[in-house]
Length: 568
Image (cartoon, rainbow, N blue to C red; front, side, top):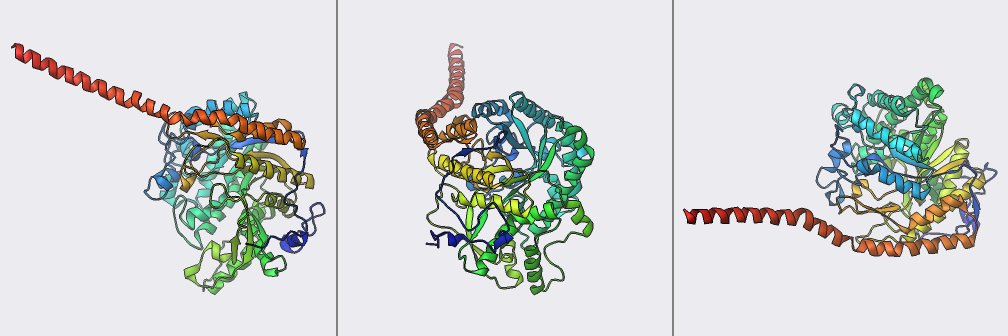
């Protein structure tokens, strides 16, 4: 079992991340089990999220072009069970039904992404698709009619396949202009109604797309691919921000930010200077990789030092981490009206050196660290996602200290489950939301400028390389049924009460929420247990009956011909 000392001295972080200067957050304390009853500031925004490829389906309808995920998921062996997002939740057709769910939840905002190839099939602006634009027009209008604020992500990983094939995707600098043209079209068509724009969702995924090959486009350019893709994404983000700032902000009065994911890293041994520095590297190579250029104009110094030194050891003339020119640094710095934070879990971090050499070159070996977990941490679903609520508060305070306390919207936070049977009484998700939202409330009390929270996710959906084997949704989606019906989990009732109370008013009331939420899901569970029978009856109605009828007609015709022949 990992060290998990009870004494507060085990969590002294006066050296890590230069955070000792923070006056309103005591890094020497970490009361894991304390719960703070209180409410969020007036106007705090509550929401839920989704992304286009994960939920829309309709992958080849109404002129939509192929995305890199359409192509990647159709390759055998890339996705668990060879699942695809071809139909997914059928959100393209059911957005009005889903808006009704949001309204029942009392959401203030809904975060979704626009599929680039749905409105520009080839990725080139001159060839935009009217039906794709019409879909997002109707979605945005319907949200606003129901008093739900749209928060729109421009890029949630579904690059047009044409741009991947023609230019090599984010490996090519030309993506900056193509992305800017796409964003400009979105500002032009939707900007009068959309006031919150997110350029990129978790650009760290470049590691999985261009380093390990686990995600689309499935390239394994170890030690270089992720850095190059990220470099172009950062510059593309800055260009889009400036485009909005110079051409649209004056008349549309909106905000442009970026959504970055980050786990918290805690030193395994607080008495070890090497572990303390390794924990700093973990956070800087994850969140700081993108946040530091956007706020300060350049990569974290520790990234430049480590990747640069290892590049020299490998006999390379220049660092594998690209560099920004002085003009680019100035251009990128400050291009963030608000920062989106996606957060799910925490790791213990210890120093672990890696031998120099090209064969072992990768983003992961560049960091010289090992990630560890405490076996006592709950792990209800995804193998990477452990429930460690206290790390959330620490990450939010890190952002406050490092980046001048920017306006923050939590754009993703939630937990999955992995189970073959249906379970709507998701008590573990209730516990996760309760604990993580409470740590966010503590961070707000610390002075962190958090303005909103987005539960991830509204619906069960396609989970990238895990297919449909993991479920993050507040609402259960029956993917076996062609109509993709939605069923509320117990967490819906709990989250709804958190929203209505704008936090946690008192212990007695919060405990009552949980009890009532679990009670309400029991009857729904019984209903859903009968659903396989419904699906079976649909199959009988839609397949068996027509087939039998056709056979009867054929047999009748044959019998009639036989009778006529005998008569003649």
